[in-house]
Amino acid sequence: MRYVFRRGWFSAILLGISILLTAGITNAAPPQFAQVTPDHPLTLPQDTGAHPDFRTEWWYATGWLTTPDGKPLGFQITFFRSATDHDRANPSAFAPTQLIIAHAALSDPSLGKLLHDQKSARAGFGLAYAKQSNTDVALDDWRIVRSPDGSYAVNVIARDFTLKLTLMPTQLPLLQGEGGYSRKGPKPAQASYYYSEPQLRVSGTVLRAGRDSQTGNDQAVTGIAWLDHEWSTSVLDADASGWDWLGANLDDGGALMAFQIRSRTGTKVWAHAALRDAGGKITQFGPDQVSFVPQRLWRSPRTDASYPVQSLLRTGPIEWLLKPLQDDQELDSRQSTGSVYWEGAVTVNRDGKSAGRGYFELTGYVKPLKF
Image (tube, rainbow, N blue to C red; front, side, top):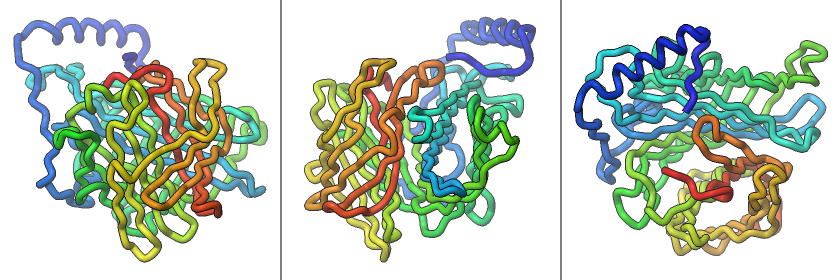
């Protein structure tokens, strides 16, 4: 893991010395992390903030944007908070008890490839943090913050693009699983707390290096987004190698979330889906009712991995065809989370008819993920 601090080599040396001094001078036991249980109801908006007593957490916003000339763009911004095994009683300001990681990506079919960037740092010094009681996560000049009206301000200055977006809720959050307790495997402890905010109305600007920067003008965009917030401690099943996940905003105002956890042999370890219709009725689908069936593979010229970028999702009797905005939406995050995954904007057809747009995530196709 590399740590991002803009203080030059002298600070880097001090940082290294601090790690040595704080990493082995005590025999303190590693921290005991909180566990996910089915009897703990989520409380919003308080639970939109960070939960540092759990090992892993992320805030994940994806969506489709439209430029003034009607061209589609996809975007993704994810902030991760990861608690380490470092002694929390250590008084050093440099003690790496919490790590903040961020990924950002822009899908532009006119380029034919994904623009993406990543950052990571230990929490502290006002440079990287995840605040409690309200969504406010930052890493240098990347930030997502929730306002009292429930809207989210997203600011990302990446290597090849800049996003300045406002995500405004148009409906209530969707608590996943059983009131926010979301199973991720056959054992009850293999679970997370998880809610989504579908149908977020987007406004803001995009600046793309080499194109918009030639004129110096940010390009106004509008669109629809989806936000996930999830936190947990327990790892997935020992046989799990990755997952397929979809979050889709439906044209009629509904929302669809579906995922499957795959084993190292490609079989299904666990699966779940939730469909909220335009009237607010929620239908849950269990592991036996959810499947992802590859329809077309795309092979990455960089990693040689084959991703099922076009897939047929079945939720009970309903069939959803997922088709990518562009094939090359592979994100290499080996400098931050250590993984490579496909994260892409997709159109969604229901029973052969256009039904919506969403984001499709495919992990563990390069190599099994280490959780």
